[in-house]
Image (cartoon, rainbow, N blue to C red; front, side, top):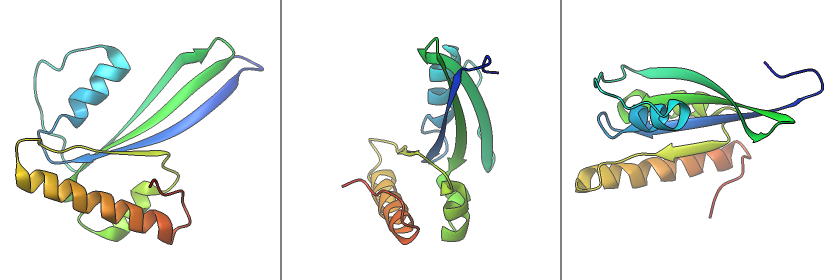
Length: 124
Protein backbone atom coordinates (compact mmCIF):
# COMPACT_ATOMS: atom_id res chain seq x y z
CA UNK A 1 0.00 0.00 0.00
CA UNK A 2 1.19 3.54 -0.73
CA UNK A 3 2.85 5.52 2.02
CA UNK A 4 1.09 8.60 3.34
CA UNK A 5 1.35 11.40 0.80
CA UNK A 6 2.43 9.02 -1.95
CA UNK A 7 0.58 9.14 -5.26
CA UNK A 8 -1.14 5.96 -6.46
CA UNK A 9 -1.36 5.56 -10.24
CA UNK A 10 -4.04 3.02 -11.23
CA UNK A 11 -4.02 1.27 -14.59
CA UNK A 12 -6.28 -1.48 -15.93
CA UNK A 13 -4.93 -3.72 -18.70
CA UNK A 14 -7.10 -6.17 -20.65
CA UNK A 15 -5.25 -9.14 -22.23
CA UNK A 16 -7.24 -10.95 -24.94
CA UNK A 17 -6.23 -13.80 -27.21
CA UNK A 18 -6.51 -17.48 -28.00
CA UNK A 19 -5.60 -20.15 -25.51
CA UNK A 20 -1.88 -20.92 -25.55
CA UNK A 21 -0.94 -17.56 -27.14
CA UNK A 22 1.19 -16.42 -24.19
CA UNK A 23 -1.07 -14.03 -22.23
CA UNK A 24 -0.41 -15.56 -18.80
CA UNK A 25 3.28 -16.12 -19.58
CA UNK A 26 3.59 -12.46 -20.60
CA UNK A 27 1.77 -11.42 -17.44
CA UNK A 28 4.02 -13.50 -15.17
CA UNK A 29 7.15 -12.28 -16.96
CA UNK A 30 6.37 -8.59 -16.47
CA UNK A 31 5.03 -8.86 -12.94
CA UNK A 32 7.40 -11.34 -11.31
CA UNK A 33 10.33 -12.12 -13.64
CA UNK A 34 9.26 -15.70 -13.05
CA UNK A 35 9.29 -18.28 -15.80
CA UNK A 36 6.08 -20.21 -16.28
CA UNK A 37 7.39 -23.76 -15.96
CA UNK A 38 4.04 -25.53 -15.93
CA UNK A 39 1.42 -24.44 -18.44
CA UNK A 40 -2.14 -24.47 -17.18
CA UNK A 41 -4.73 -22.92 -19.52
CA UNK A 42 -6.73 -20.04 -18.06
CA UNK A 43 -10.40 -21.01 -17.86
CA UNK A 44 -12.64 -18.07 -18.75
CA UNK A 45 -11.32 -14.84 -17.24
CA UNK A 46 -8.68 -14.39 -14.54
CA UNK A 47 -8.00 -11.21 -12.58
CA UNK A 48 -4.60 -10.21 -11.17
CA UNK A 49 -3.37 -7.17 -9.27
CA UNK A 50 0.21 -5.97 -9.29
CA UNK A 51 1.77 -3.12 -7.33
CA UNK A 52 5.12 -1.60 -8.20
CA UNK A 53 7.24 1.43 -7.42
CA UNK A 54 8.46 1.55 -11.03
CA UNK A 55 7.46 5.16 -11.65
CA UNK A 56 9.35 6.83 -8.84
CA UNK A 57 9.78 6.62 -5.07
CA UNK A 58 6.97 9.20 -4.80
CA UNK A 59 4.41 7.16 -6.75
CA UNK A 60 3.09 3.63 -6.55
CA UNK A 61 1.83 1.92 -9.70
CA UNK A 62 -1.22 -0.32 -9.18
CA UNK A 63 -2.03 -2.45 -12.23
CA UNK A 64 -5.20 -4.51 -12.51
CA UNK A 65 -4.78 -7.18 -15.22
CA UNK A 66 -7.70 -8.99 -16.81
CA UNK A 67 -6.48 -12.15 -18.57
CA UNK A 68 -9.16 -13.61 -20.82
CA UNK A 69 -9.40 -15.90 -23.82
CA UNK A 70 -11.07 -14.76 -27.01
CA UNK A 71 -13.68 -17.49 -26.50
CA UNK A 72 -14.69 -15.87 -23.19
CA UNK A 73 -15.42 -12.56 -24.89
CA UNK A 74 -17.62 -13.86 -27.69
CA UNK A 75 -20.40 -11.56 -26.47
CA UNK A 76 -20.00 -7.81 -27.04
CA UNK A 77 -21.82 -7.15 -23.77
CA UNK A 78 -19.28 -9.17 -21.75
CA UNK A 79 -16.34 -7.61 -23.61
CA UNK A 80 -17.84 -4.16 -23.00
CA UNK A 81 -18.11 -4.92 -19.28
CA UNK A 82 -14.47 -6.05 -19.17
CA UNK A 83 -13.43 -2.89 -21.03
CA UNK A 84 -15.05 -0.68 -18.37
CA UNK A 85 -12.28 1.62 -17.03
CA UNK A 86 -9.66 -0.19 -19.12
CA UNK A 87 -6.61 1.89 -20.02
CA UNK A 88 -4.97 -0.63 -22.37
CA UNK A 89 -6.10 -3.63 -24.39
CA UNK A 90 -3.41 -6.02 -25.58
CA UNK A 91 -4.57 -8.48 -28.23
CA UNK A 92 -2.52 -11.67 -28.54
CA UNK A 93 -2.48 -14.03 -31.51
CA UNK A 94 -0.53 -16.95 -32.92
CA UNK A 95 1.67 -15.29 -35.53
CA UNK A 96 1.98 -18.37 -37.79
CA UNK A 97 -1.75 -19.08 -37.78
CA UNK A 98 -3.65 -17.05 -40.37
CA UNK A 99 -7.01 -17.72 -38.67
CA UNK A 100 -5.63 -16.44 -35.37
CA UNK A 101 -4.35 -13.25 -37.03
CA UNK A 102 -7.75 -12.69 -38.67
CA UNK A 103 -9.52 -13.21 -35.31
CA UNK A 104 -7.14 -10.71 -33.69
CA UNK A 105 -7.89 -8.14 -36.40
CA UNK A 106 -11.63 -8.66 -35.85
CA UNK A 107 -11.18 -8.35 -32.06
CA UNK A 108 -9.37 -5.03 -32.55
CA UNK A 109 -12.24 -3.77 -34.73
CA UNK A 110 -14.75 -4.84 -32.05
CA UNK A 111 -12.72 -3.13 -29.32
CA UNK A 112 -12.57 0.09 -31.37
CA UNK A 113 -16.32 -0.09 -32.02
CA UNK A 114 -17.12 -0.59 -28.32
CA UNK A 115 -14.70 2.17 -27.32
CA UNK A 116 -16.20 4.69 -29.73
CA UNK A 117 -19.75 3.70 -28.70
CA UNK A 118 -18.84 4.38 -25.06
CA UNK A 119 -16.96 7.62 -25.83
CA UNK A 120 -13.56 6.16 -24.94
CA UNK A 121 -10.35 7.24 -26.70
CA UNK A 122 -9.84 5.10 -29.80
CA UNK A 123 -6.35 4.64 -31.28
CA UNK A 124 -5.86 5.47 -34.93
